[in-house]
Length: 532
Image 1 (cartoon, rainbow, N blue to C red):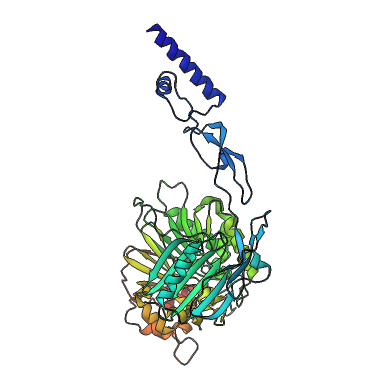
Image 2 (image 1 turned 45 degrees about the vertical axis):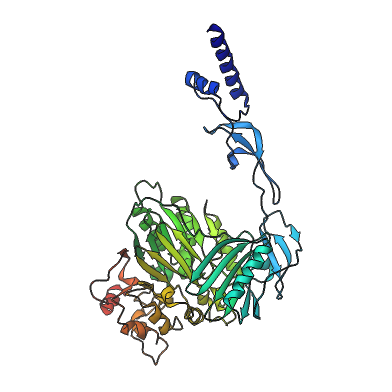
């Protein structure tokens, strides 16, 4: 018996000494468990955690980092293991014939270049190849679109098989009516294929190899809040303009989705933060923005994001930004704008940039699903009326209802969306396009959307003019003979039970929302009350 006690004591001392010296036992033994009971915690360095805290040797693109093994308690050992190789972030140069002739890593300090001369699959008749980036920005974005006509669904299936045989990995697939979509990841690029049944067309979108993909499903979460949507009264007076758009959606897990934000003013940035902070769950130390969507790069839509970054960046946690910006000159949109906004978004700690939302994509948040209906990519090769037709249009389904955000979409995107299935367009709540100005979406698109509630982001007072005349009423009351003829639809639509104008004040809609009260406010009285 004494001999057994001596052996156990020596074993315990050896284990303690090994822990102090940083040795790496693969797993605790029975003796170690006994020692833990008698003397306390014994480190077992078997955990493989790949984080900066345990980094032994960092790695550049294409190489493998080394990490220290760790104990479950967090203590770092001395032995190391190989981490995952650091991938290159390739931008590609693709010829109009669909050949990837050059790839270059975009990560700072790398610049690795290869010339794979790989051919992309093609079907039907090539209508055109269109670059979505130009000049030096091709080294950053590299996006390109190939448009094939006279295609069948079997051609789409053939493209999928050819890509898989070439080593591409299919990440996601989506459907919208008879339309089909597939997302592939390859060594040098990502490829997004769409088959548009009504047009008999296949479009192939070539993007960077590191483009992030939104998750189609998310883990189940406990309900912490009732879903709700806020239309924020943007400060057009401070912005000295008559646009602006800002929405906040609360999800069932207590996180939020922000859409655009308004002007680059303290008041608009503060309005967003106030709604986030006052309506978060008590157990969230700070508001969590699950997704911040930017429809396009006009300052009355995304200006508040820049001001928010300077005043409230550390007061919230932003998990991701969602958008699709062009790196070509489109109306009043320039490639440098895209770079500037992406750099700003990347400055939010922990935020992931979902920089390439394509039509047909579907992804999830807590008990909410987002479907992308249109982006600037869909307008090619039609000429752009303005930067408004670079809006990313999407629909959110939550609490048994659907909310469609058109941003500033105009005729170009409106005409493309008319080819989508009607059930994809149908929505209960609609954000009215381009503040109700001329050349916005066409009336026949609104007929397909067929909403009960319309959210109209516009002021009553003309803040661009020293006379401060009416700006909303002339647009709302427009007739088919003038430039605001689309608004006749909204005045006469039998389906519309409620119109809520932004300048009526910040409005909360608890979801699901049932319209109540008068269809319209007294716009004349509100104008008189708000004019200087």
